[in-house]
Image (cartoon, rainbow, N blue to C red):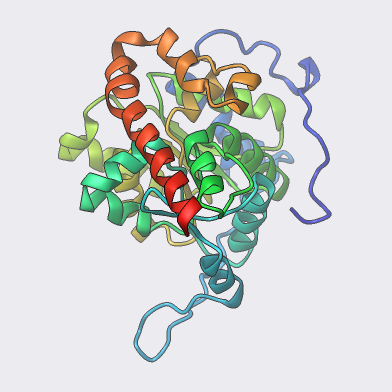
Length: 330
């Protein structure tokens, strides 16, 4: 980020008023306790809380054809993209991603960030609609060590793995510093509210515009889906973390972007559950060595065994073999 980015992370104590936050927190309880700070007209705002910044008017870059013209920096970034498993990946570090999102928000421009892993690439390879969702994203970064390894074998390395579970913290830090309101959508019941509390504990200036953990299958009921969309639009956040799983979260993001063109959306998968603590993350050494899937498989064998062992493992092996051969003969 820029030089005025706050240095380091910290976790405040009772002096910030969050010492009593313990155990599961429901969406309703969180809304009652904390969301007033996101409303400029609330009592909290009238007594010294900083107001939510207005969304700048989005600049138009329309050419003669009516299509959006990317700026020079965007064109340069698109030329640098690395193609792995049929997906164009932006070779960016976590800090570069945060800088990019903040710069766009300052200009009043929204966007969509996708973090594909092996499972998403496998889905994209067989579903044209899923492929279109990824290709329509503004930023695509590798969330999966097999993709990082494959890029190296192809001779077009990326800086490393960037996960939604990491970005939810780093982007929230930036949002807290610039007072951009955030919205958390997804996770098991109560997870979004609990995750918001954890983020506020670390970044007391974070403005949370809303939280929601919609029930499983809500997207199949028009009334429930409309309720979820209307709540996000009414909250007017600048940054939305959507943890509903691929491609469900990307389909919802595609719909919401039409109503919130100045907002950035991050499809973050299990990041909300990780942040809330309802699902444990693998130790750092397992994440670095590409063994996070093994940790998660041990914790949820019934749900993940087929996905990891039957579907993803053969696909990853084939991807690495193909990448090795292409790298040797290219």
